[in-house]
Length: 78
Image 1: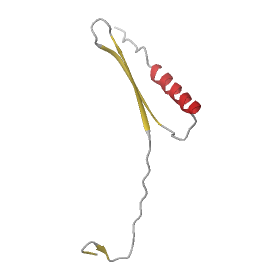
Image 2: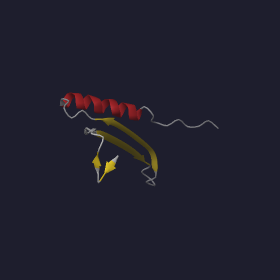
Image 3: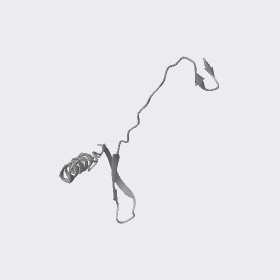
Image 4: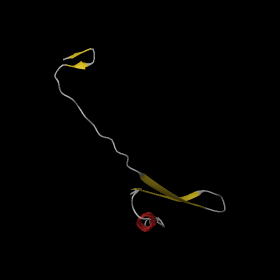
């Protein structure tokens, strides 16, 4: 039972928050003649802010490779 915002049962609730950093990379390819979007790739990954720069670069390289594995897009057969 609650009276004026006071919990009469005697129980307490605790919580914890944390920050999760996520990076997102988007690559757009445009037709240079008419400036129409030809292809867009998007990849996101949780970023380890404590990682060494070499590890961060390795993670970025892997993310770009994952993104570009879907390029060029398959053309449907008629």
